[in-house]
Image (tube, rainbow, N blue to C red; front, side, top):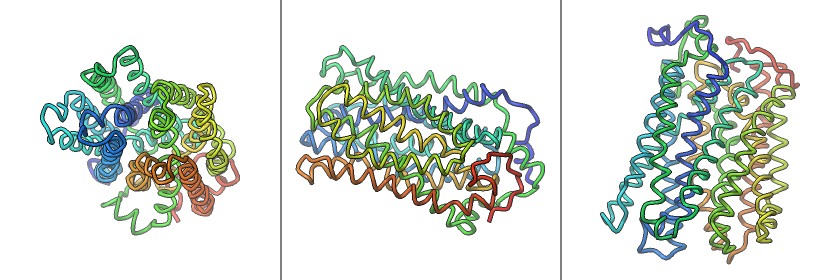
Length: 452
């Protein structure tokens, strides 16, 4: 057992509400950053940083910079999760919060194309890359901080990390909507869009205070004390000894980086560009759906503790696939109520039923000493390949089809049917670590359970 891991162990019993608050704030900041970038990429970045393009081409260019952040997430995830498995969850989570917060604040101070020319989009991309480095390990660490408190309630506790994601979406879009509600387009483009970026410093300060005061997770500490073993290079062990687990974990995440980003990010551009409606309709719809999702995801997590995360995720994926075409039918009515209902169903129920239990699923898939690395690698690689490009793919599909939405609906279906298959195929791997899991009986998982 290494000295660093010995120091990570602690006998202090954490307060569960404080653990939830600590994990939730970090996840909220991650997706405040990414949600804010998504909405500004959809609505204001094209004329500010890509003014030489046509409006549609400028939106495509802005969405491309949105994708850049996802390209750096796997690298950041690999670096930070390595230390998360060897040193502990706590110090890594403090570092990721700092990296994300600083890069987001700097975006709010960034000069535009009219002020510094080509350097504006270049610096924007650099900051987006740095933001992605920190975000790459944030959700995984927050999910483990919660799921490792009590193995019998992994689903319920772990779902609060997902709730933090939706809190971040609510904050980013809510703050953006409140700050810009009565602004003219000229004021919005001049300075209004900067305010939400600069406000992230408040979340960073609170989050750092909570994280530095947190003890290490009980399961990680117990692993340090009882197993007396660690993976010298966690990523190498994950890829060499558990490739099937990694591939199934990557496939399972597709719903959260494909289907989800259509419902929460691309929908903003679709409503304004294709339907010609006010930007506030999409913003309010996503805020409502995310706010409801903050509540629904712990409920789905609690259900996973009772019947198994596989069953909940597969049911959610199937329901999401069925809803893909009705989602666009409801949007195309241009009826505000139906648009709100479509986004609420798609995000808080469809995505929520998959996202809520997924922390428990990943915790069961990987052993404690390589869990952070396995979770982050599976999640962030699929996210970089699919997630960051989803708004770009959706925009391109609509252009290719002459303004039709059906190709995007087909894309959404594919991105949830693959996870359904992956979760189904993971049954035997999960049973090797907890035989009762597939039968829906939650219980404590021995730290020394066979990895298989």
